[in-house]
Image (cartoon, rainbow, N blue to C red; front, side, top):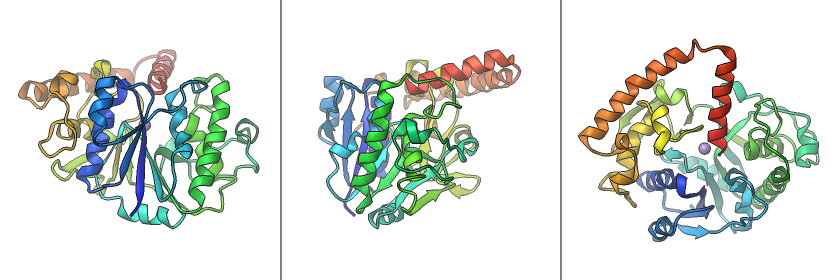
Length: 328
Ligand SMILES: [Mn+2]
């Protein structure tokens, strides 16, 4: 299978990028990995360099790195393009998805249950669509596999639609038609100009928060993971702060993604390993690290319990802050 993996990373997303890269290799995916460098340090670049192709996307006119994802249309030549987030890890073989993408289908996973019917007539004007969107499953843009003749067309249109957003101020309200950036533009295109393209939409393959907390790591060695007894192929730590960041302690609990991070960053069999001092204590592969994660688990469960009783206005502000961190 001739596939290329594309991800966007800056210095803050380096640990996540390394975990994603290692997870791909550990699950037997050998295709080239291309990192769109939106602000890595020289040290990070030199460490990624032996394992990934680094590309510098344009710095002008792109206000947010999330908007860079479909810039892949400038790089992708042939075979299957796999666009994959650097806050996501792969826990099982993607073989059948890559094969389906190779036949010209688009593969992606269902988004959150409360977003699954997201659609806006305003998308036509906002994204410059040629036809009106028709309801179709709203998918998560954290993993998208596209191949065949549709790949260059969809990637180009995805970029063109997303590029229009750079001139528009982000409105921090999920009811805004462009709140979800490149994920909205992708879905708008799949629901309109590309409505005839077969979509392999996977209802159970991606674990997102809050389901991530219920997800079980069956075997840390193979990364085998299940949710409600069903195998999961992607653990996607959406939102912020990320568990590898300094402020990650406000969220880090014993979820499957955080539980696998030390194994993915420091395991003796990983492609690129970090120095433990590069991540917060609770992610270090040491006894104090494991103890810190257990303690955080207790503290953050408590915070969540309190959180359900906070006044409405405060809750909305917290949500806003969280989504800002996610976008930022
Ligand atoms: Mn993501």
